[in-house]
Length: 493
Image 1: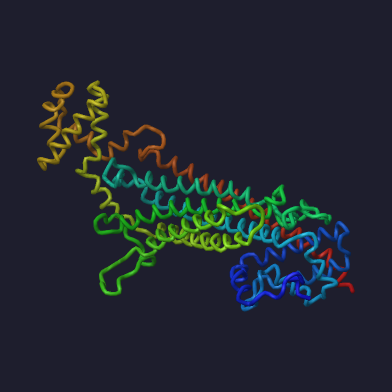
Image 2: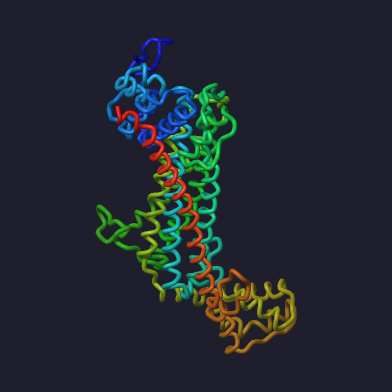
């Protein structure tokens, strides 16, 4: 018997191929099998299906293929699996397989099961990237580098300070994933098509066997909501925005104009025509894939925006975007982690970039406020005028301040004079950094404590992810044990 039923005539192969999800059902095939197992165990426990029939179905499911076969024409893996059961066991037995459930709640459940594993994988990849960031900070953290605003030299900072900014934005990505996981890990099973079912199914038992932390309460919401897909793509987009920004800096810093880093050959490529080239192709690809992930988010939002409740086949199109976007995100984060870990930072070049670049002008302005008791806006005006004179006259800033400060300060506030030795100390980038006292600042003395705090955070992240994994593994053990118990009758016959 064809499980499609007799309401409609046979669907044309062209239409089936057009609407089929078999091409990307590989991702959820194993979860579909497990979902069927848990549901059947519940039916056996409630007496809706006899032990003999249920055991035969469970025995079939235990040997069912956990990947979508190539070249088979079917609407989806769920239909393929049921048809295979009917062909193997006969409709008198396998006809009970779909009792009390629908493809609607099955696919929603299977997607959530696959997605929670992907969230764990992505969180681990972010942890590895964060570890790479801290490794560079530990090795080269005290090196002085130009701090930029508007891509112009602003103030000197330590390399560690810059890298901690990477770490912290990635940490928010990890936090978002953990919060997302809690909303994804809710079971729609038992929702059936949209209205629930009159068949006695213990939804909480099924959820427990599948490793869910709870239920999607409303049956219609359970089958038709894909906000968890949109939220996942939002998280992936945020991660890729961060990854793209880091990639952009590595691309800029590896250029001859900056010359701050040397990327490992493993993450670079030469030119097909110019033999001298070393192109940052891995970073460029990660930067580009950010656009692809953002496109997936927009595509899913466009699919969802005018869809009526509850299930519509349009929802099927969201899934392919989800898997592709997550593949791109995990790959990009993994590549970026390896690239950072192997990047050589040119410490001398970084340090020389902070000399004679006016980046300690703010330190001078602050000194005048404290020492000379003038307002910051007056001090800002004085130092700004000195910079202008230095730039236009092409005279070193130190010499300009020594010769012009008394005159300029008299015009704006009061006459001020600073000796060359004292001025040199004020304008020295290293001394400028050491004078920073605000928490989260770039004082080199803060690096050990900042490193320790972030290392501890990595440990906490690992514990959170391990807890998620352990819960899934425990559920698989419970399902396996229940399966062994309920298939004994088949084995004993």
